[in-house]
Image (cartoon, rainbow, N blue to C red; front, top):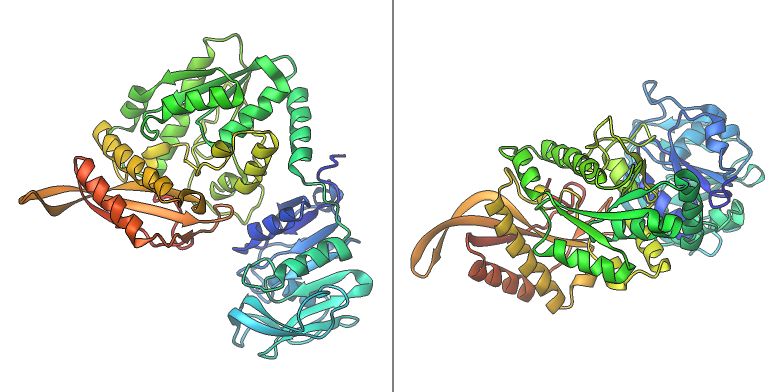
Amino acid sequence: MNNIRRGGVVIIDFGSQYTKLIARRIRENMVFSEILSPESAIDTIMKNSPAAIILSGGPNSVNDNSKANFNEAILRIDIPILGICYGLQLIVKNHGGNIDSQGSGEYGLATIDIKNKDTLFNGCHNSTKVWMSHGDKALDIPQEWELLAVSSNGVIAAIGNKNQNRFATQFHPEVSHTQNGGIIIHNFLFKIARCLPNWTPKNFINEKIKAVKKLVGDNKVLVGVSGGVDSSVVAALIKKAVGNNMIAVLIDHGLMRKDEARECRSFLREGLSLKINLYDESDVFFSKLKGVKDPEKKRKIIGKQFIKSFEQVSKKYNSIQFLAQGTLYPDVIESGVSDIKTAKVIKSHHNVGGLPKNMKFKLIEPLRELFKDEVRNVGLELNLNKLLVGRHPFPGPGLGVRIIGEVTSERVRILQNSDKIYIDILYEDGLYDNIWQAFAILVPIKTVGVMGDKRTYEHLVALRAVTSEDGMTADWFKMPIKTLQKVSSRIINNVKGVNRVVYDITSKPPGTIEWE
């Protein structure tokens, strides 16, 4: 039995946009959570001895006969269950109640009146704001169930069966707009389900070190580092597990930020006491990307060439079998290669959807089930430098996905210089740590300008800055006007080939954080 996962929560995902948010909210309480499909076998659900099950929301109607397959035996598992939105409707339907698919729904903030505060709502206000997002609604309450809350619109907002440890909410307690959402989730986890708070950075580190030791034995492990927090945490974990049998390699694909290859090598050597072997493969990557404009093709080309470069590098060492990399859970979800059948492909991450099928290496991905904030906490537990741990995420394909269209050495030069100015000013103005991710994008548009009384026809640079908790959703950062003015002026005056700067104010969704 894996103790760090014991006493956690299984989330049955019906395709809700908030499912990953539910998982994070649970983990914030130091309780393990995993997401499984509605048709999962009972043995699969119970493999880690969960303390509870949560049924997520979803876009479908329980009255739709064409809805996804659902293993109804899940509802008969003798552990606490919480249904959220679609989950409530599913519970009502399966217990003989009726669901209305013809009426008007509720979307956005709503007020609920709590009728019973003994269990799920213990410690909540009698009247509170919640986040609603549903078209269907329950018309009645199943026998032996109790009304726990009702919305101001007269809609059943929460029900419970204390004897069976079954509860359900029509609203979304996992969304931050729900005022007492944290209390509700905490009540379910610890007062109802008696979950175990085992999911800590220390426990995670100990588990991964043991797992890597068992897998690798006396063999060597090649670790690809980039200077980012993900690869650095992987390197630190692998080093603790296999010691000198770890070989750290930095492949310079020519698409890193200005001077970053040199800086990363020095930073990691000082911060991790690691010898970083630097290999300049930029000419190879540029040749592979020549003439390629499609973003998915660029990502996959970069991913495949990374592996080829690592395979070539490995020949310099004696029989390396393992390659470790910093794949995260959002990478897996967005690439559509997880075990969750409701996941859709958003974009292929170079280290997931872009990997060759016939690799010579066995992959080690110790961070594959973590969100970014969890990785940072693990890094701090490993005593990594706070500046390193706090760095903004940087995509594996690097500037290759921040240059819209074809990648050339000249376009890389323009973007490197523009991006460095942008990031430097964010540090100058004390804004860097308030932002999840900030970067410049080179847009394949030239615009007319006037510089020194002369007409110019030069490149457009876009600036992006977002706030986020895990990268799955994000809001654009409300950048001070003075900072934007400073960035624009400095880029235009110092970067040859740029005469216009714009700022992106799109959130995720509907956009993504990166442009490609």
